[in-house]
Length: 219
Ligand SMILES: Nc1ccn([C@@H]2O[C@H](COP(=O)(O)OP(=O)(O)OP(=O)(O)O)[C@@H](O)[C@H]2O)c(=O)n1
Ligand SMILES: C[C@](O)(CO)[C@H](O)COP(=O)(O)O
Image 1 (cartoon, protein in one colour):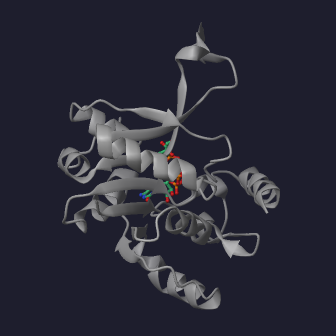
Image 2 (tube, rainbow, N blue to C red):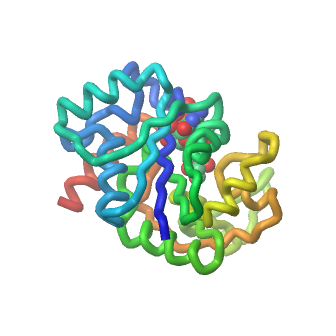
């Protein structure tokens, strides 16, 4: 089985309000993106890594790789105007069949166990999407709902290649917030697997402080 991970890092990171794009900010002395790529390489030595970045950042990324002596092999693909378009660009370079994980470049603390489980479940069931329970109470439009019914969705979101490639042939909809929503729209069942509260998405400035804490805890 051929294994792919599309690491999407083509966004603008507006909520981080940082001049340096958030995927390049160092945690523990290493850019966020390198931590993320390392996790997938540790999970599977033979994985094919596809990194989606804005084309304008390609040269800077190459400089960073040299500076940090980062030698994990990966294919660079240019990002799109939305997460959907970035994912689609990544999928376009996958020609053969296999299993494809799509993962946010800014979730550097995904565990190798979770990555491996997502591939195993996707191989058997077609889809595997990482999620956690809500620790907080939840209201929708002001109305309290049973939080047992709520799952907070993370990445990786992992699929048989044929399933996700076909699903992404659709026109983009505003309801596509992640890859699971695209695949579900194509009529497939989404299998949720257990994620981790450590698998944070670095989105706003305080997430960088949490990131340093998580890194130290795992050292
Ligand atoms: N056009 C886009 C938009 C988002 N992403 C990626 O999707 C992941 C999750 O998105 P988010 O954290 O929201 O990143 P941004 O869209 O960059 O952030 P913001 O919404 O704050 O601008 C990120 O790794 C981001 O780079 C992408 O590859 N291409
Ligand atoms: C894919 C995702 O990380 C799952 O939680 C999330 O939907 C990304 O959303 P964002 O608005 O691009 O941060």
